[in-house]
Amino acid sequence: MTDDSTHALAFIRRSQGDEDGASLRLQRDQVPELADELADSIDTVDLGVHTGFSILSRDESDPRIDANDEVLKAVERVRNGEYEYVVSWDDSRLARDDYFAEWRRAAAEGGAEFAFVADVEDVDSMAHGVRRTVETAIKREEIQKAIAAVRDREQREMWNTRPPVGVEFDSEREYLVPGEQFDDVIDALEMRADGVPYRTVADETGLSRGAIGRWVDNVEVRARSCRDDETARQLIEAANTNDEPDELNASTTGGEAA
Image 1 (tube, rainbow, N blue to C red):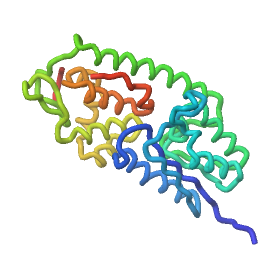
Image 2 (image 1 turned 90 degrees about the vertical axis):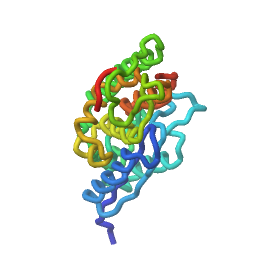
Image 3 (image 1 turned 90 degrees about the horizontal axis):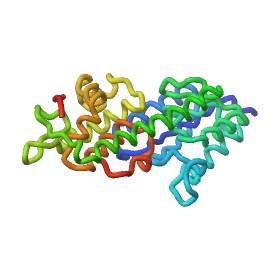
Image 4 (image 1 turned 180 degrees about the vertical axis):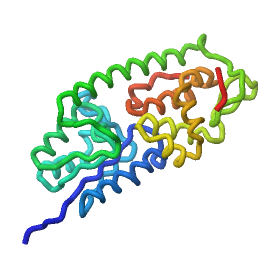
């Protein structure tokens, strides 16, 4: 008797943040939901906060996605034809470097299709691999420049208007420090960096779409007005969450209200 049911692998991961952050909550809601629409049964691999880089771009002693037994077993199940679909938020959740090619080979051998919540171009095309490589290099350079700027104490700027949502004045009313909704701002920046629509980000965080947009557009300016490096670093990393935190590990550290 043959099994005519279809099977999907739902894969969940993000590079940084909290295990209970809004971005992971969104993945845990929408990735299995899409998998459930496509298949009769679902297996879920939920790595939570975990690096997406492999031995192809990391040292052997570093944390790596290809050193995770759960990932290796999932790739092998895909290769063995146990799934018709591999579902994730986007292709970068499966891997941040060329280890994605291992997923692609496994899917080709096992007859599985990729399905993504976010809008992703054909992952089987040569253009896709080239685009990912170029965009990653460009973004890394931009982030390094931004971090260098906020680390430069001479470029620190005192904040001279009402603080934006999520931050407040320090005791001297000169620089910005985390406020009551700071964690919501971090979640919002991370989700927008992942391509989550503004409406969804607003619903998940409770922030207005206007406030979210102003944070996205002005995060570097606001980071330069933070009193301490750690607060500034969190903001820069959140706004560029598709890059791993170890790419941004250098210490980091205005304008308008929310």
